[in-house]
Amino acid sequence: KVGIDVGLESFATLSNGEVIANPRYLIKAERRLKMLQRRLSRKKKGSANRRKARFRFAKAHLKVSNQRTDFLHKLSYRIAKSYSFIAVENLNVKSMLTNHWMAKSISDASWSNFIRCLEYKAVTSGSKLVKVNPRNTSKTCSKCGTITEMPLSKREFLCSKCGFACHRDLNASINILKVGTDCP
Image 1: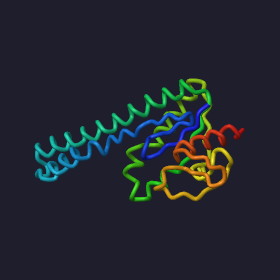
Image 2: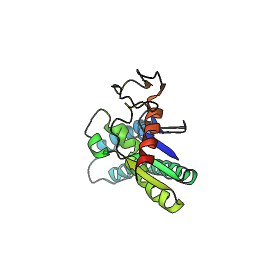
Image 3: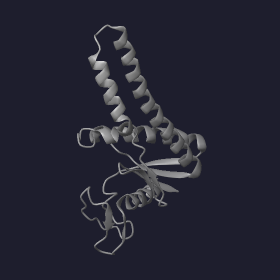
Image 4: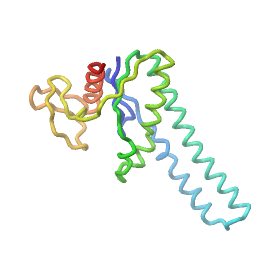
C-alpha cells in the first residue's frame, strides 16, 4: 500500500519515504524556446524561412512534451506494478492553474496526466487506486491527528501536541494513505 502526495518541490512523495524528483522539463528548455521564439518573430510573414523557424519552434515544444510524457508513463508503470493499493489526492488542478505564481510549474509537473496514467495502469496491473479528498492532508499530524496551521513556505511539519516532526510532503502522503484505506 502506498499514499502519493504530488508537489512542486519534488514531483511526488510516497508514504514509504521515497521522494521522486521533479524533472522540470519546460523550465530547463525555456532558454532555447525563448531564443527560437525570437527568431520566429523576426521572420517575414509568409516566407519560407518563417515556416522553417515555426517548425523548429514546434519541434522544441514537442520534445518537452515527449520528455514529460515519457517520465509520467515510466513512473506510473513502476508505481502500478510495485503496489497493489494506491491512494492519491483528488486535486482540482484546473482551479490551481488560476494562481499565476504557480501555474507554469503546475503545468510543467502535469499532475492530471500523471493521475490519469496511474488510473489506467493500476487497472491493467490489478492494483486499486483510490482518490482522496485533499483537505488538510498537509496540516494534519499523521501520528495524533491534530490540525496545525502551516503556510505553504514552511516545509517541515512539527506537531505542537505530540512533537512529531517530518517533511511536510511525507506527512501528507501518510495522511493520504490513512484516509484512502478508510474509504470503502
